[in-house]
Length: 320
Image 1: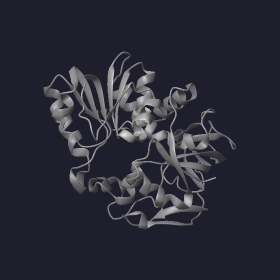
Image 2 (image 1 turned 120 degrees about the vertical axis):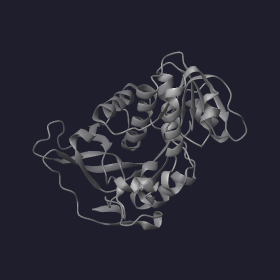
Image 3 (image 1 turned 90 degrees about the vertical axis):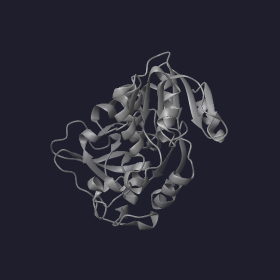
């Protein structure tokens, strides 16, 4: 099968489009024929091995997994002897290492039936960003109807889903993005948009989700109600060793000593969370907006566009 492989950390120049053996499902695994694969910042982090502290999990000298990709959608091609939820021909979506390939394997718990109202491209773009948004707003933020919510990075992969989810939960949403994305963010349900390039952040909010930039924590706390919640899910800075994790650590150290709730956003793939993501999509509560698609062989261009093109919503690879 064709796949995007990588044998050393670095730029997109380290990626190759080549033939590799097709995977074979274990007893509790599902093998799918990949129709589409999502492209998210996690792919860039694994490709570059940054922040360097992450190499303890990714592989010290080189990536442990040689095929790139994580989010995926496709059709079940074969199942292991112990698989009970899926059969050949089922349309599914979920997460698995090595999704930038014509075939991929993972435990059946990593997949959910593809919502019928999503095509394969939209379904492939949803898992990681959807689980991150859901964890941030509902599990960590506990957002309630009537709240004023600020989403920083509202036009991005996680941010544009967070805007939709906050609106679904009954919140009034202000989105922060570049001015050229204002109409896009408004179309997601935001009642107000702040252009970070030209405007200062103003207002008072019950909940802030910060998915972009590196704003000081005191600046963000000044926008919260006395008992408001700040969740930091992304950002820049802190160098090659720690990436954007330093600001998150500082927020968590401060939190016990103030009335505000300050938290980092760590979203791990869980079967129950992916199931909720699928249910929200099936109900029409949210759907990924696709900025661009690329062929599997153009994965390097897709990753370059992800980190430098400021996509509105998600991008994906079309495989089959």
